[in-house]
Length: 271
Image (cartoon, rainbow, N blue to C red):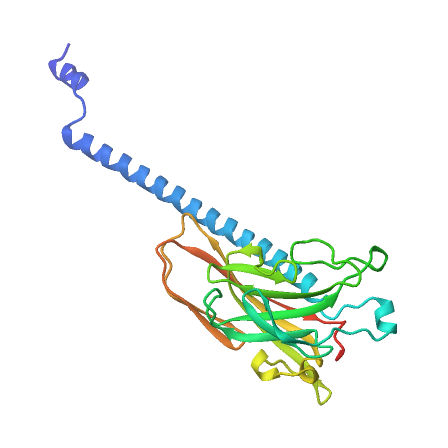
C-alpha cells in the first residue's frame, strides 16, 4: 500500500480544529440557553399580566358590590322615611374618626397620610341598612349578610403594606380584601347646577347637602404583581386621577397596572 494513503487514513483532528469545534458548540449552547431564558421571561410577563387583569376585575367587582350599597333602605323604611341618624360622637372604624350628619350615607377622605395607610391614598366610607332575604341580600365586610334593620358603616382604604382593606361596624379593625394594591383614588360626581363633574373629597366639602348630591364615583386602583424572572425595575410614575404616584426602583421586578371603574350610587338621595 502506498505509504501516503496509509498516513491519510491515520490522520485525525488537529488541536486547532478541535478548539474551533468546541467553540462553535459552546456558542450554539449559549444561543439556545439565551433563547430559553427569553422565552421564560416572556411567559412570566404574560402570566403576571393575566393575573393582574384577573385580580383587577375581581377587585373592581367587589368594590362595586360593596359601594353600591350606600344608602340602601328596605321598602318599608322608604315608606316611613327612615334614614340614618346623625353620629356626633366620633365613630372609630378602620383607624379613622367618623361623624355623620342626619341622613348622610357617604363621605370620603382625600390623600390620607395616617400611619397605617398608604401615603396619599384615598378613603371612602358609606352607611346602609340591612335587608331580609325576600328583599335581596346586603353584605358586611366579612361577607356575612347584614340583617334587616341593622345600620352598618363600611370603610374602604389601602394600608401601607399594600392591602386593600374593608372595615365596618362589625369588623372595625378591617378585613383584607386583596393584597398587592398600592393606591386607591376616588373622585365624586355631585349633581351641581344640573351637571355632573368629578371632584375629590376635599372639593366636595362637608355636610349632608353636598354629599347627598353624589350620584357617581370614579375609582382608580394601582395593582401590582411579583414577577420572579423580571429584571430590577426602574423608578416609574403613574397618574391616578388628580394624584401622581412615583414608585422607586426595586431589586426585584413587579408588573403594575392602573385599573379604573365608574360606579353609580342608585340609593343616594341626590341621584
